[in-house]
Length: 219
Image (tube, rainbow, N blue to C red; front, side, top):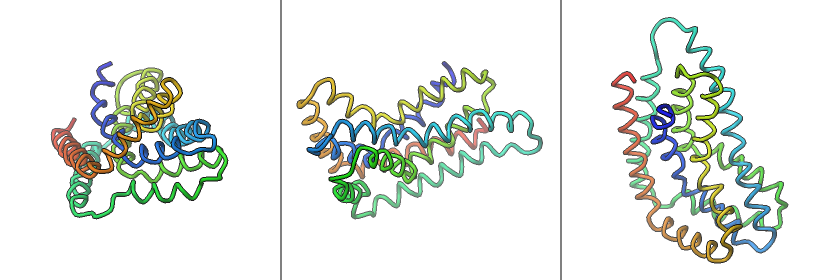
């Protein structure tokens, strides 16, 4: 449980993905198989995390256990933290958010099958640089922990579910609640469209500072 709590800030930060949410809401707003497409999209987004995370937790743990010499792990945190701070500062000057661009591109797949949306989910996660930038330090910390392999996998999967919140929760809400949930998600997406830059900038700067402090502290 302590390992889960320690890595929770990174998982929550990685879950803040306006782009992933925007595309998911647009899929649910479609008229042709919206739930099947949204489910395929969520599964596609999960595939890269599981494909990277599960082998990484096991293989990096073995490498950390057998390594000798300088521990570069803190410097990985510092490097990622500095990068996130730079991205946060850069985002302040961007005129067009990425989710706006991706929203337009998604319209090109209006007649695509759910299988195509599985691929869209994979591509969206693999190109979601900020989520991956936070996911990799989290993965590194889990791998380097002294917990048994089964415990590391369980912690990873729980954190993965948090990272995937913006892809998984919208179709679940629509499936359970129906039209009111769809309208609420559209309102949320509109609000994020207006404030997404501020949200992302705050996340980048806050977690960037967190990682730099953590790295310099040698944890």
